Length: 73
Image (cartoon, rainbow, N blue to C red; front, side, top):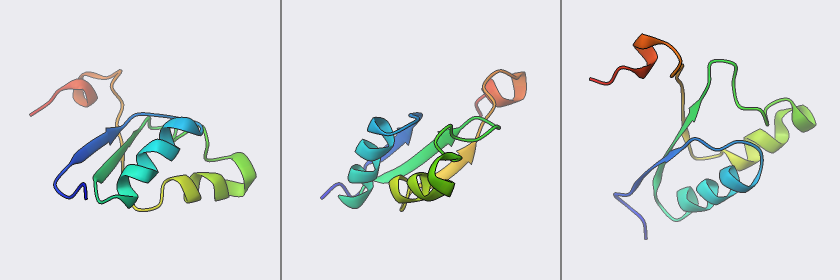
């Protein structure tokens, strides 16, 4: 249904990851952008919450606070 749609997911905790997970289930390509320290949801419930709400997504760590991380090509 959403084939060809690319979604950048900068969200944390539950509502945003849940919404982008649903978009991935509908066929969108979802790319989760995380800070170098990782998503804040990772430590909860032994990582099971993070895994369940981020299935089917690509994940990229990006530090936008550095010149190299903020620069686009």
